[in-house]
Image 1 (cartoon, rainbow, N blue to C red):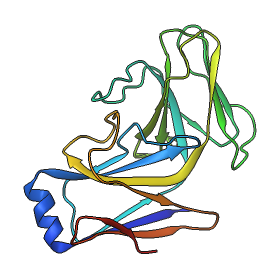
Image 2: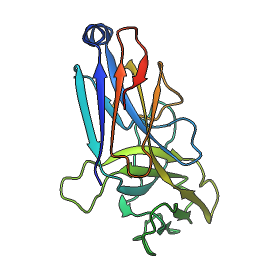
Image 3: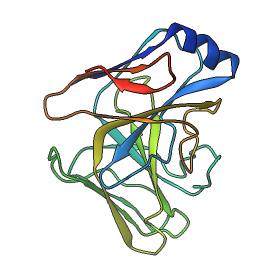
Image 4: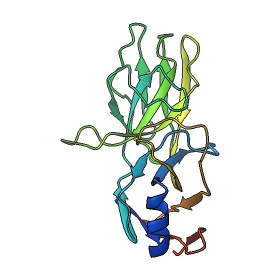
Length: 205
């Protein structure tokens, strides 16, 4: 099921934000994550009405760098993974194919057997599709030890904010301005939010 987010920006605010060199940022969350740690989408050419569409499909990799300000960089191949599946980074640093049935609503698990790959990175993408837009949205520091593992359950919650220009895929320590959290419940596929003339976020539907 495709999900849609429409972002309305007051026309005066469009001009103000562009003059200040701001980008519109989107991020995604996983279960039990209070704040996003990667910029999922960065849009400098924003207008009065901006539409974003995606499908809840994911890929995963091992990574090394997790410092704020750095761009996410995979140290393994990026492999598609479904809810409830398991995947492993072996002792040589190679990532396996996912195993197990796809179970909607269940976390997927990455097990690590290589100390150099100490981070899991999750992407909103289906790499099995040609020219897929591989967009990282989450990094985990849960793999610091040999044979450690991390369970990750992406949730369809999107965070929006404006900030000075940064690329999508940049690791962040927090939000650089007022943020808006948008939830998609069971069966929800469309949401609309507005950045008002007063410079505040409001959810329209």
